[in-house]
Amino acid sequence: MYWEKDIETMPRDRIETLQSGLLRDTVRLAALSPFYGKKFRDFGIDPAGFDGLRSKEKLPFTTKDDLREHWPYGFLAVSRDELVRMHSSSGTTGRATVVFHTAHDIGQWTNLVARCMYMAGVRKGDVFQNIMTYGLFTGGLGFHYGAERIGALVIPAGAGNSKRQIQLMRDFDTTVIHIIPSYALHLYSFFEEMNLLPSRDTRVRIAFIGAEPHSERTRKKIEELYGFKAFNSYGLSEMNGPGVAFECPEQNGLHIWEDNFLAEIVDPDTLKPVADGSEGELVLTSLRRTGMPLLRYRTKDLTRIITGDCPCGRTHRRIERITGRTDDMLIIKGVNIFPIQIEKKLMEIPGVGNDFLIVLEREGYNDRMTVKVEVGQDFFDGDVLHLEKLRRRITEDLRSDILITPQVELMAPNSLPKTEGKAVRVVDNRKE
Ligand code: ADP
Ligand code: ZN
Image (cartoon, rainbow, N blue to C red; front, side, top):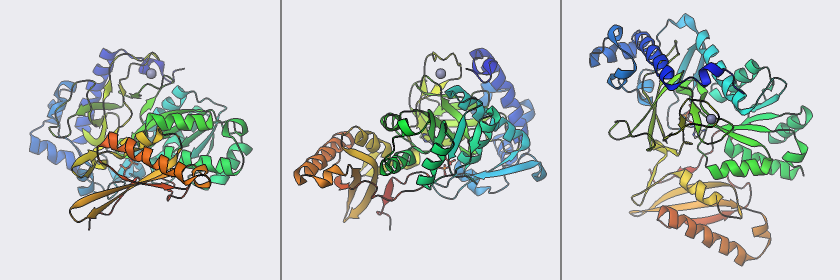
């Protein structure tokens, strides 16, 4: 059940000793890059004298803007001919950032993804259909290499082309898939259209879902619709991509692989560490990357450490599923709202379908929030009162949660625009 038992179940004191040594090496290596070379001089950090974990808070933070400003090569710690691969972020919040890898880095990353997939139960003999965009996005090749390392048969299906995905699953007896959660919900409507039931008409037993925030309720919904287990996969291109933190079979939080990443949770305003168990921004340091090491990278992702031991026996600390990105936060009529709050509430309401969209407008000095919600086709075929009742219920439930009253528009199934990548949840027309 373990890919690397000694590492996955390493006692905490040994993990910390290991991290300390790796952090020292990483600081020395990072000093060779133009960005950190200068930062260390400005901060008065002597890389040769850096003494490891206990001094971690002396290190500077790194932000996405730093990566953008030193684009493209300002973070390289090796010469360019050592590099074998480039990836980039999806550009969800602006210009995409690029990350470069040496052959060593790709090897490490591959091993981590294999560890994650093995932990969820993937074995040699499995057929793995990777329903993710290939190319610069890390979700495609990251999982592809990991699955091959385990010895599974990989179908590099890529994203989109829904009917063909279903055909591939059926023709080649796919047992494991990797898919963006919003797309998994959309794909289900094609099963319905083809009069197929995933649990009866495919052999898929494991799914990896990630790359975008989703609630526990959405995971449950995907599991129920498909009849498989769906494991939450967290990663970001700046820390390779997938394989940073991952759910084990207990599905009670995501183990962060602490032999590869140093994780801190800080208050996003003061940048001071928060107590274990409190929510804050996840900050990550790569501990084994050679091409482009990153120190104290501010992910902008909000989560908390789950305290206590995991029954699976792994000793790497767990984080809660990501509750939002600090830059996803909407301020509407002065109230702070995360799109995931809306998703969570909607998914609890019977009759609500698989997709929603938040549209923001300005009317004079006021913000207007409209939530467009897909609901079951039967609501449109039946009684108008029935539809109105559902609309009121949704409005009321959202109001009691977010404390402002949105306009709710009910939409037919599949009528909202779909993407093959991360779902677009908000259209903000308030900015001129
Ligand atoms: P971008 O930062 O442009 O979206 P990436 O493709 O590198 O580009 O995406 C990484 C980000 O995606 C993470 O920082 C996080 O916000 C989000 N993300 C990835 N996996 C998950 C997950 N399992 N749950 C919630 N959010 C996730
Ligand atoms: Zn566990």
